[in-house]
Image 1 (cartoon, rainbow, N blue to C red):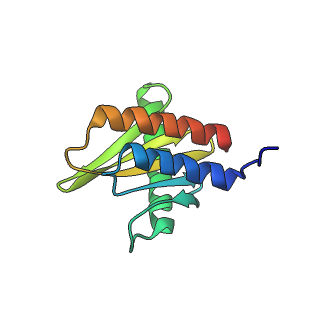
Image 2 (cartoon, one colour):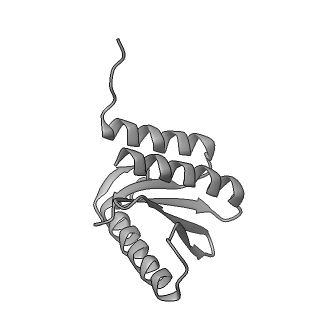
Length: 125
């Protein structure tokens, strides 16, 4: 007999897998497209509610920009700063995955792992 994991447990496992693949990440968060945090592994002192709201807002804006420019379905976007980047991935129609990475992270590996995680999240939600 196998135990069935709850959606919350499955989402937390997805984040744990992502963090294990990229231990240098500063944080990762799953939120609804309405901006409500669902699961997160953010650093101490980070307000997950604010990050979730901003990630969902950025995703919505990115979708509008893509629609306006005829660029197809938005898959991901990034916001860069001098000390790191935030990558935001669409997780189906219901979710958003935000990943906080330091400067110099291996972008190929990050995108591969995070896109897989976003796809998993979409399947869970």
